[in-house]
Amino acid sequence: MKYLNELSYQVIGCAMEVYKNLGPGLFETIYEKALIHELTLAGIPVQSQVVVEVNYKGMNLSEGLRLDLLVDNQLVVELKSVEELKPVHHKQLLTYLKLMDKRLGLLINFNVADLMSGIKRIAN
Image (cartoon, rainbow, N blue to C red; front, side):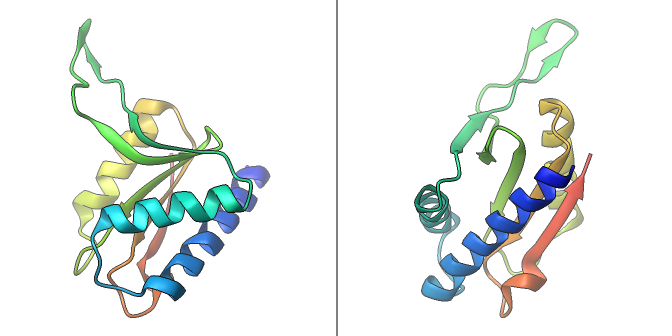
């Protein structure tokens, strides 16, 4: 878990750099592209729009279900640009963590006055 804590710290630092340069109020896709660029510049491996496999009693139901970012194949990052985070956003990330058998995720809402208030760590 120590590595995951360090990795999440690095991702938060990259998100803060994006926020410092772009500010609040843009579309989620803009923040996603900027954060991918920032992570890449930092040498941190990242995948975007990763398919989440959902199997129910032998049937694949995962069509169209994607998480925003998977950092170093370990940390799930879900991005938002909403007025406020709702409980369903936390549950969505927790479900992704369970389905992908990952231990830690970050929920980052860029549409806030102070980015740190828009970042939530969620553990599985």
